[in-house]
Length: 491
View 1 (cartoon, helix red, strand yellow):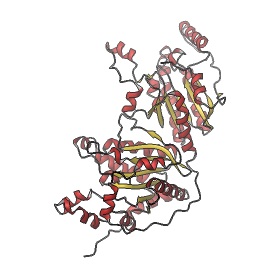
View 2 (tube, one colour; view 1 turned 45 degrees about the vertical axis):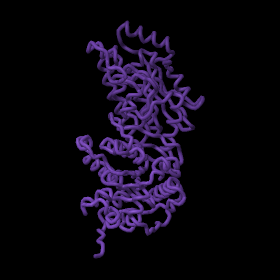
View 3 (tube, helix red, strand yellow; view 1 turned 90 degrees about the horizontal axis):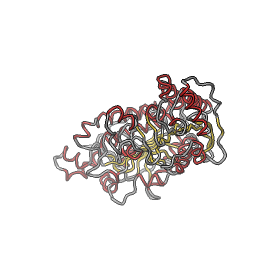
View 4 (cartoon, one colour; view 1 turned 30 degrees about the vertical axis):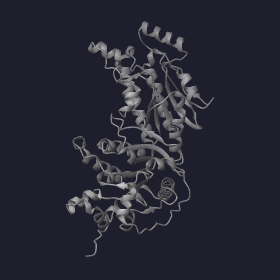
């Protein structure tokens, strides 16, 4: 594939004529005569004084810091001087409150400088960590190739990580692997596409699409605290039969998560997987916006949950990634519940499903960001409960929440699944009863269309929550579950 130089990538991604370089001239470098000759040749060939260029520019009008690797300079390898340049750029971006886009292309540590260059990956990682802790986006574009210490440090720490199509990406490069082991590395493993399949990168994009993705993420992040005057609608009251609610929620034609995402106020940026080798089609993680506020969204897509594919422990590990992402970017979090239930399988049990549900509950209860949960349709069992704790809980008109599907609950209570309608009513699982019993804060009418109505309700809720301090929200979030009074049906 044709490899872009650092300057060509900058010209492709940044708004026209907005790049401003940050790089000071590299001082005197010590080394053998052979190494110094290699440096001189690299400078002559590339017109660059080192293997990285840093600076700032604009993407979609948004100011952003950039760090871009130059493979033509000694294979993009990172020595002490290059590492110092990278660390300085990261810290300047942090000090100036700028999102940071890093585009490494590198064979890793510069072997000519040995261990002292190798440990600079720790220094760079520390700077990136501080940038993230400051609530600033760190976006990574992995180019062909990205390997070794670069991939294992600042190349793997992105809030959002995308890769160049066909790029070789891996910890140990194939040439090094063969030299050590005497055999070729297995084919088609260290590729951008394989990493995407395993949830290690969020997307595989051509360079000319990178600007659009980066601009969308920065737009959502920069609008995290904007909104309208908070004016929540009065709670809608319903007198709906609980079993009819269940039946309507299961209709094949009923809109779901995709309808809601289409009703958001920016094109969502989907993210993939846990970043640790797992992905799950039953849970969507995305950055988007409702009203004027950027959010991180975790949504259960019922159309991706079938008899063969059910929500498993890896989906909840994706959810935990999303919760942490919202916290680091200081974005509100929206969770969307629509599930017939979690996976019932040996793999789910051995994968720690129960523990992942518990970890999701604690993470949501403790998260300092504003949270909104939406019971969009089916709310079955622990898979639904895992995304429930929030500052404000909305329920669609035909949404419900239950420990088991009514048929399963009936089989336990009555030893007869046919009495599911009767049990659904007695358990008070429908939207009207969730509101009456204090589990939900608002019922969202579906008369104007499920997606638009829920999107508007989310925006109103986020605006209202913006007026509260994090401490107030955390206290109230925990108290709402402690203060629920059991409903006892009359005899």
